[in-house]
Image 1 (cartoon, rainbow over the protein chains, first blue to last red):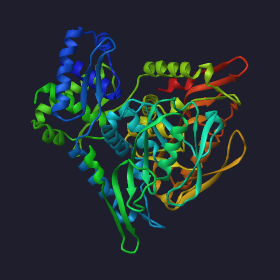
Image 2: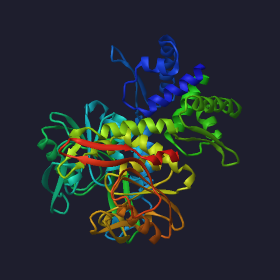
Image 3: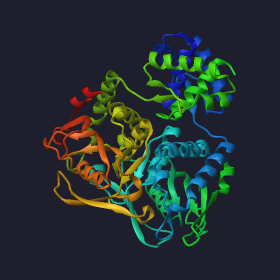
Image 4: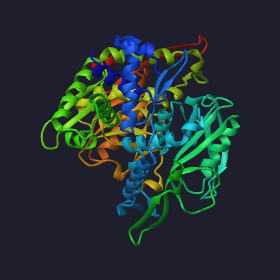
Length: 271
Length: 271
């Protein structure tokens, strides 16, 4: 195998397993090369990732050590991405009866969900989250992609508990916008005690759903490592959760003027 | 930039955009290299992918041409993967009250969903699907990953229609196992007429849900390009849909013997 071929194989393995430590020994076996040769290959890969700003290749020392890929996006890159998101969301034909905005195609798009998952992972890399938690349905794609980039499992709250998921913890919570009482539940096996949990969702209005997930996390004896949403509504300005991260703010939807006012969130500067 | 650095950048771009044609011109601009140089780089990448069986790098000729990455798994690789899946699913502590099997951690695992999505994409590459369709909730991760590998959008049926998704088409269908009448709905914007749709789900018992999705697809004036499920139950043997692909078969769950009998599906030989 040539160096170029080994490099292709190494990059493929790293990108397929974000945030996982791949040992030099495994590479050596799989690629039939000496560890010293592979160390040189990995140095080349690391430099190239840094040169093209394609994320971070990190060397992990010690007996359980090796190398891992941490997907990450620069602030500039995030700004471009979110501008494009706002542009896509502003298309007047997205206005639905009731002045809702049709976002389903974007939240279920593999490409968008993947990119947004990288952004959330970049923002919450240092939060030491051991799980990503979302609630069905539209938050699942971006939550899955965030979990993938952080190398942690995904847990999904349901509106009802279902027999195929076994014993579950349920809570009632008050929706921040409609003030209605709702239920969400999570299988008892889904989260470990004393773990750290990153909450991810597609949309925040009053923050009631995020607050409900926060309470559910604490019922599990776990801690919230952060809250991330794709889009928040400007109103109500007072949300039911304090610290959260958002990518875009929906300021207004005006059906008569065919206008959707959605802009990048000032919180992007946290990246 | 050295050849090694260019190769890293090319592989990253290809893997980040499966099934999308990336033009040589864009690479040339982004990497500040001549097209002839890039052609050589891409030839190296293609050979390396083939040597390490990491999927297919395809050159697309013509003015809109370029190069694309098609994730694919060999039959041998799929057999290993599915054996590991069956092993994971057989753990006796997965047995739930009512002789259900806890699978939530696996279906929501980013790594498993990603791998299974590659398998489904390999099987249905030639189906010319333009959408992947699933129903909330547990089918979403593998359906999203399949859609990503095929380079097509994901559409998700809901149990209820929701105002944030606009006008929706709803159908009633009879669950194949419980014989209960259920409803599923899909936003009118989610599928285009005359398109081809690959149906993906995590589990099939009687096939009622898959049958329901089939009917919904035909209500949209679209055609079913295939049906893929992760796990099917052996009984009832007569399913409500005829042609479908599955990875594993759940033969029996015996609570008193602490035994789950789940085996690779004979259908994996279709790969």
